Image (cartoon, rainbow, N blue to C red; front, top):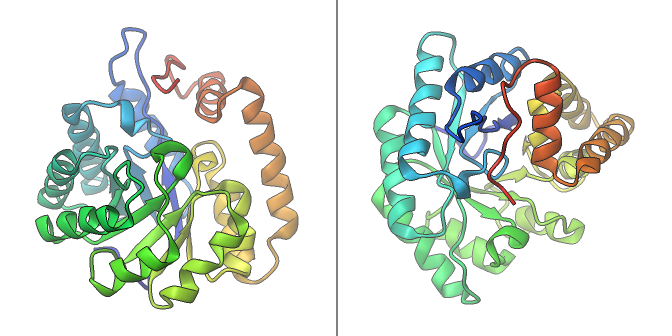
Length: 272
């Protein structure tokens, strides 16, 4: 199980599709090979980079099981399952399935609401439905909801969550999570903020989408940031991210580059 004290690099694996728009499990396993060629801590499956919001529940469960089976025949690594939904019943279904097959944590979007009380209730209800550690996920541009530091503090105190992934792109907010919940797990979810989050904001882990292409670079950046020496490597990664975004989509850029490398049969995506 994921612990509050865990640190390291987690890569949110993309979800490859065939030309017929079906999940391409062969390419998915090729991608696992590429990512896990680096000494990363683990994999996030069905996350935002994995287009979790656009996957059916059955597709998510198939991908989760595939990662679990891969781990069984390879070596131990942590598996974080993103529920990929803002619906509580579906989040519970995905989290309980992840628990049954031996995953290590669930990463959950908040519901689409302006009520912080509803956000607290959502996470508390999810935590009561599974023994998996729960991670909050602050990414307002996707969810339309913002988890405030005060709300996060309450969720940690209620033991609804053990940590949070911050992808808000708000530099000031990144510094707040450890202030309100010092013993919680803070994860940098914005690739261009890794050095800042690790060196200055008290984060101890990162979930970095560009690791689908550059897993060794992300791991090196993380290790150097822990030593306080990540700024130059961060600038180099920022340039790579900028190039990926030239396609008009981060996920599209990742898939186009991976197809060029021969890792994907097709670079199709569902995310708009």
